[in-house]
Length: 377
Image (cartoon, rainbow, N blue to C red):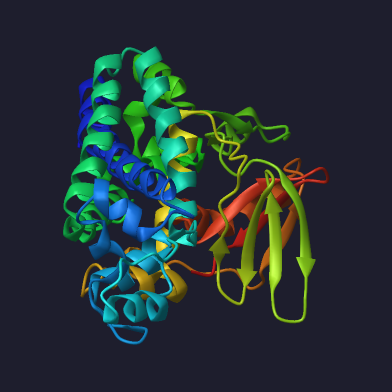
């Protein structure tokens, strides 16, 4: 990958980020179309949408049984559609119209995708401002997302294909499989010494200016006497995971708060989407999207729903961990290093740099100094 070339990033935005945005928006648009049916009688909807009945009853049987692989069950679990099946089959058994009320609720999957899509939109809008994409490309993706949603409404059996497409694009976007996302993930917290060793061309003036456009900035400059050491341990970051806001323990879980976002760091790492995602830059937003997709495909509560669509769902987090088996994890959940104003502090930081580089730990600045918090995926 020629990471120093602007054209390489244009290709990434056009071929990986933009299609993922379109795919995520297609699902959200489909849900919004279905939401219009909430509270309406199925018998009335059938008059305008003859195949709408499939969404609510395909793969069911009297009196109120859902087949685990049936279309209605998949819609119910992923898009929150349902009717009172017992009522439906009772009316049908008497030759009556199915005057039963449709219900459409927002599922956690829809809510989750609804947090990912705006982050991608921020990226694309910023890419347009930088001249990396044309506004027509973004508009076409938005228009296509409505068309794809309408197609599914006309042919409900195509919904699993829509979700499968999203999963495929989401997985291919992650740092596990995508070299551009991998680079951005490494850059989310990186010392100048690591840049010199691993991505030296980024430090060339023209290339560095481009990465500044992506959002890369100095995050922490050590306050030590030796200017060469201070320069080597200067930490760069996007606007991702910048401000440590505290820890909270319960009997079963340990919570970490960064930039208004809640993370579970014990017993198993987990992140929660929020209405107010703080990232604004291209690099910061895409790091957050990577984290959210990893979380979506890693936890059992999500995987059990996603396996309704694909039989063998990859686990990009486990594959990523296998790439870096030699990285030493932290001895605690969240370690306080202190201010980086001494060589002792820099020495302690250096022990954690490999884990920070791959994302097994996160370096975050607090009021009293620097914290390194484990991500126990």
